[in-house]
Length: 202
Ligand code: GLN
Image 1 (tube, rainbow, N blue to C red):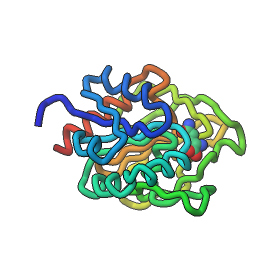
Image 2: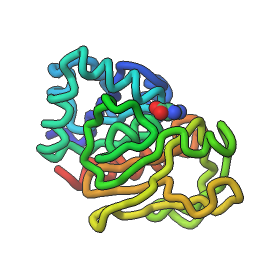
Image 3: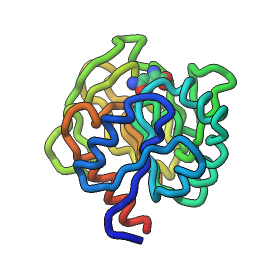
């Protein structure tokens, strides 16, 4: 395997371009993934923000849901932001009953959780593993993590008044998920962390 990680961005729906740019900036080779064949050509996958119900439906209609689950079970590193976090969650509340996920992270997420208080907001977070400087996080109709199993490492929780105390970044083995959108702020530390996870899982 080459030294440069080849990372796919699930390109069914959502802010694919922003993640592709962030990954390229941290030195990854980037490919857009729309089919099982595309998935077979990458060593890791980013699942962007967008709308998880639509993304899930498109994954099913493109015959991509099972290949995604197989790749995840085989140990492919995956990083999901916002809707992507929902896609990696084992359990989703406030979802349509037929909403399917790739799963893999032993968490229950609540869709649009902050939306009950405020649709979108920004907050500075301390994120484990990226250094002491706070990360400016942007939340857009974001999910939060309601509960996490024992294998899940909590990387960040909200400290500001909106949603104080709720978990918004987690890792379980090669799977990483954030409620917020680091691809929108120019702070590349989360993408860099993911590239490190990819290198270490080789
Ligand atoms: N609310 C969206 C969902 O449930 C996620 C929002 C986002 O990705 N910015 O899928």
